[in-house]
Image 1 (cartoon, rainbow, N blue to C red):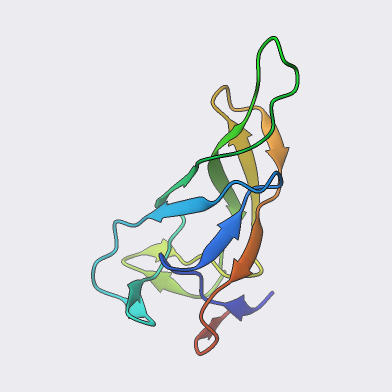
Image 2: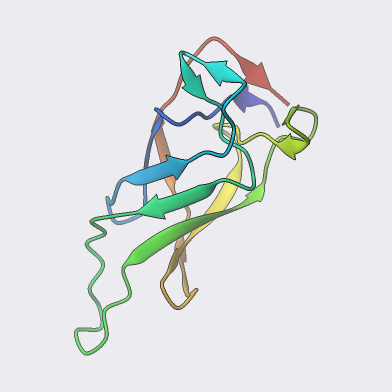
Length: 111
């Protein structure tokens, strides 16, 4: 599964429209002037609109990547690709669905 390399400045949304923010520990390898995202980075969701049930809302708060790049690594960690598989989770780690990668750089591809 190949795809463009995901990076800190790329746009991703949770299934309910909340933007995903990437907090990268990588400061060396960059694409489009932004650090490349890896499997061990932190992915936070803010502004998720999922508020059902009303007694105890479960909005998305984090993204857990399940299938990163198989051949591309940065600092020994697998890189996240536009085609990588992930799941958004609530604060209680309840699965909420996959994130949607809206825009990323289009120069560097990985496998």
